[in-house]
Amino acid sequence: PGHADVVRLRYHGTIDAGLTELVERVGAIATRMNITERILDIDSTGGQVEEAIRAGDAIAGARWAIWVRDGSICHSACVLVLAAGDTRSIAGTGKVGIHRLIRDHSIATNRRELNAELRDVTEQVRDYLARNGVAGALADQMMTIPNRRLRLLTTAELAHDGLPGTHAPQDDPHPNQFIPQVGQTSGLPPAAF
Figure 1 (cartoon, helix red, strand yellow):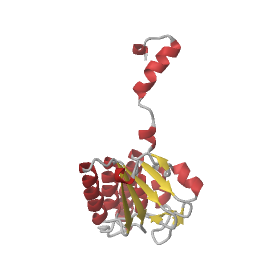
Figure 2 (cartoon, one colour):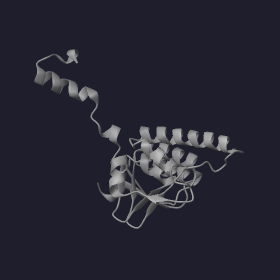
Figure 3 (cartoon, one colour):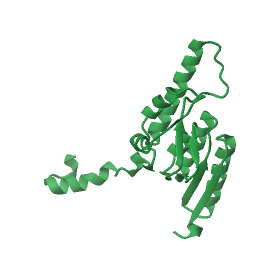
């Protein structure tokens, strides 16, 4: 595709409502202009978990590709935005880092309430990652690292969790694509499958 067939948005900043609004606005303009290829170059230390999920849902719905370019970072809640991409690219010196995700506006007043809140966040993140084709176990890994620390993921860990590459479930062939092929090779009619 030529340059007119692609919209590229470079975002450097916090994951908040502003990112969600920006992605939705640029996506709507791209749709009106019949631009189907959308690329978000992201460079962020993180931000709000809930907004990362909202932004990610908007990104997934509009089929954006997400890139962490050379020299860029994607830490904390940014990882949720990265997970939403139709395709996810992490350049050689791009860094992806994780730690425990917590709500910005916690209402917990004791350890029991805080643990319940953390379990709820973990479940939300696990479900979100799974629907975006990323290993839900990444949510569990995040929760083992205190939020004042950061663990950079290795290339092998990124690949194991399904972060780089194409959105896995979307990349799988539809089950109906197998039926004629299987029926033809087995000699059985497609209705047998």
